[in-house]
Image 1 (spheres, helix red, strand yellow):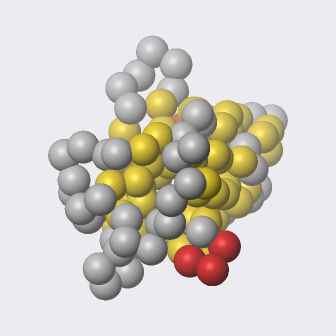
Image 2 (cartoon, one colour):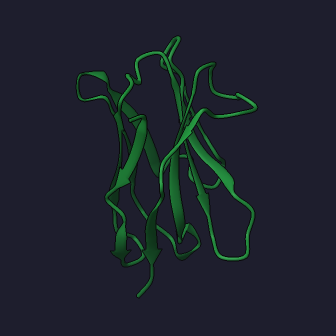
Length: 121
């Protein structure tokens, strides 16, 4: 079965760190762009970061730039999102998604189930 599974979410204090993982099953991520998205309660889903398949270029929303780092480990068929200096406004359900094209794709082919990140004292 084709599947993306996120893990690594949890409760952290402001200023803390988490590393989210996005593991693919049933297909390889090598030629897919992988995006991270998040959605807070009552809010629209927003793009957080993306790593391309063609040249490995990375992209970040202004709100997370300098704090989050996206990376890819093709041998493990996994993409990571390292989140540092977390703020309460980072609280959301985080999703990873794979696109057969590249970052900036209008549609993503596969989506994970999401993992909750809560930043609170």
